[in-house]
Structure formats: structure tokens, C-alpha cells
Length: 408
Image (tube, rainbow, N blue to C red; front, side, top):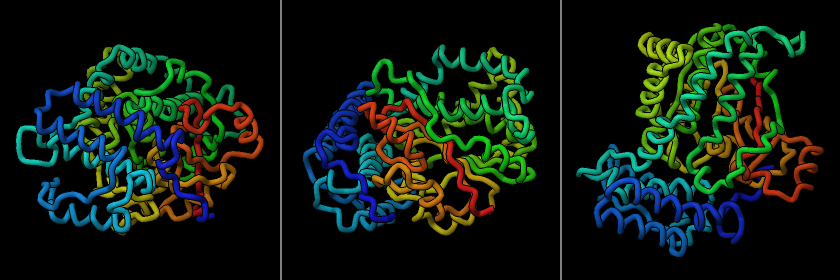
């Protein structure tokens, strides 16, 4: 199955082509409008946009400071791009090219260089506006209505105790919170949030697995900040509070990445949003998670590999060893899904476990579909969706909950 073609962005009209030629120009305009960058930063961003759409790939400058060791960072990217330098951007794997675009965008805005813009997240205004919006108040207030949903009413009587209506509601919230991805919303249709459909649902297996694990360590690979991270944190509180996890490790990006990806700064902002919420249930969740971080039952970690342009089968040994000891790793969002299964044009009916066997632990994916790659969907569903004639793989209206527990 590894013969499935790697997705690239050199096919006009394809989703990947549209990311570079339609979405990135919108992103660049919004970044330059959101913060008062000077002429040098603005010119560098414009040059990057032109290069990524009409030019060729050039390696990073060794003298351009990176977060830790600039020569080493430049050497790492140079090695990652071996065989790609000097070729058009569209000929690189889509996942690789996107990652390099965001690395270069940080460099262009001065994020890595000593000076006033060093360490300034170019996406911070977008994240702050979303987190502070009134829609978040309504979503947090809705938590007050979940306390009566602990019964199994409406579920199969054979479901194991961890699965309740409340548990399912929190899982669905974490799943569909991925629609808050800022980069997707920039070009989504006004009705893009309608017609939602779960086309692969292993939620019963997920809850049964957690019930059997006896409160082990659960790892969560975060995706986006803001309105997606909030329901992720609420779900984590549920896992800890119900004894379904003795410890949760939340992995975030070490630096800004793909517009809205969560960093430690974003975790702290989300926790503060919960703790100060007018809704008492949300505030209590925030306080419990704050205390859990202090005691170590909730740990936030990161690793440079989370900003690497590589799929997870290339995971370094130290990160692999960390995840290998977990009872379950929950992989959130579209980008993590692409890295988990490989950013290839798999036949959609390819079994999920067939392409995730490389992962070091039992793994569950919570993902709304916003790119071409998809596996683990039954043939009848694929046929039904294909008959609609719509871009169902990239619309953000469909989602999957998929579990590979073959290691147990």
C-alpha cells in the first residue's frame, strides 16, 4: 500500500494547489494587517509568498538565528530538503512544503532573529480574537447542562460504564471543535459548518479501551488553540476526574505553526479563559486542570519533531519512547492525521490500522476532514459520498473517530 502517491501541490485546481495559490495569499494579507510589521518584515513575507507560488525551494540561511542553535537548525532543514532544493515548491510533498512555508514565515516576520519581533507569534491576534469571542461564552455556558447526562440512557445497554451520554457529548465536542481551525475558516464557505456527518465511528471502542486500561497514562497530541483547545481540555478533565486516566500528557508545538496550532502560551490562555468563565462548570474545570498541572497529573510537553515536515513513522527515538509507555495516544486534527497515516492518496477503504501500525502506542484519531487524505471508510459510504459530486474530503463537514488498538 506504500505505492499510494504522495500528495503534492503542483496540480492546478487541486486542494493542495489551492492552499498555496489561494489560501496562503489570504493568510499573508491577514498576517500583515494584524501586526504593524516594518518594511523589512513586510518585504520578506511578500518575497516568501512569491517564491512559494512561482519560484523554487531554497535552503534556509545558516546565519538566520533559529530558536536554539541556528547552524544546527539550518543544517537540519538542509538535510530534510535533500533532493528538493532548486525545484519548484509544487514538486515537494505537500506536507513538507507546507511545513517549510510556515517555518519561513516565522523567519520572515523576525520570530527567530534578535530584535523587537523575536518570539512574537504572528498568529496571536487571530487566536486572541477567537478565544475572547462571545461564541466561546455560549459554548462554555453549555457545560452547565451536561451534569445530568451521566446515565447510559439512549446507549446500548451493553456499553461499558465509561461510555455515558456525557462522555459522548464531550468526545463529540472535542472532535467537532476542530472546525474552529483558523486557517480553514479563512476560506470556508459561509455554510461550511452545516451537513456534518461522522463517516467512521470507533467511539465505542475508544471508551471500552479506556475502561479496560485501568487509569493509565493518556497522551493527547494537540492541534489548534482557542475554540478547539477548550473542548480538548474539558475532555482531559473528564478523563482525569472519572479515573479513565491516571495522568494525561498534552503535547503542543514548540513554536507557532500552521496558523492556529497550540503552543504552551495558548494552553495557559485557554486555562485562564476557563478559570475566569462566568459559567460555574467551566470555571471549575479550569481550576481542576490548573491544580492538575501543579500536581503533575496533567503535564504539558513539546518536542521539536512536532514542527518537522515529516510523517510520524519518522518519529525520533526519544519521542517514540515517551509515547510507547502510554495506554492511549489521542491524535487531534487534520495535520496530525496526515502525519499519522501518511500524506498520500490512499484508497479511502484502506484499513486505518494498516497504515498506523508504525505508531508506538495504541492510537485514536479525532479528525474533521480538511485535506485529501482519508482511510478507514467503508466502501458503501465512499460510494455515497462520491455520488454527491462535492469535495467531501476537504469540506470540513465530515469527521472520523478511528482507533487502532492492535497492540493491546
